View (cartoon, rainbow, N blue to C red):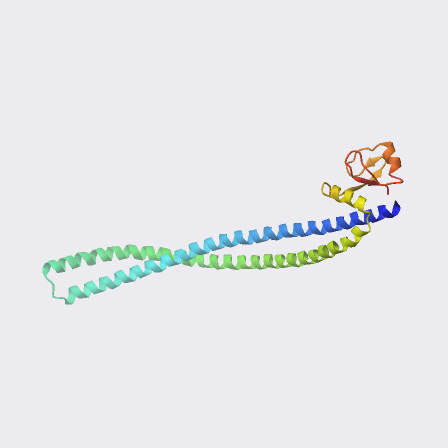
Length: 231
């Protein structure tokens, strides 16, 4: 019985080690996923601000071109008015257009200057935001790389333990093994020790008969069915 119990306990300890590695891998993978999501979230926010700034730059360039185009039109109309052979009606219409254009260009210049000022004000802020984001992302990328290294190491250990488990299984009595494997589908700890008449698995008291039997044979807890042993 001692040899059977020893083999079973070694298998249970081996399975606990496998589970520990799996839990570490799972925890690291969750941490990695959280960091990847954080990068995506921060990147989307940064790109949103960047697109807004680029749109402001586009509007500023467009407004400046509009000023330049209108200024060129005013110059052309003024030259045509000075040198052209026009009828009185054509000259009068041209004068009205020039007057309206000059009033419009004043408004456009104010708008263009306001946009230029906004671009100049936001440009250093945008540059700093990009530098801060890239610095933060580099740090997170480094942390993810470290996590990947740890996951690889734990996975290697997990693979090795899984391969070694085959040898542990062969040393266990087949009947006990079937019972153990069935319990393992229900509990992370299919084996429990008895201390002062209490099962360490369910923390419930077992009968005196069970306490006596567990000293000489492998029995199950009448409350949770775990395989019992004494230390």
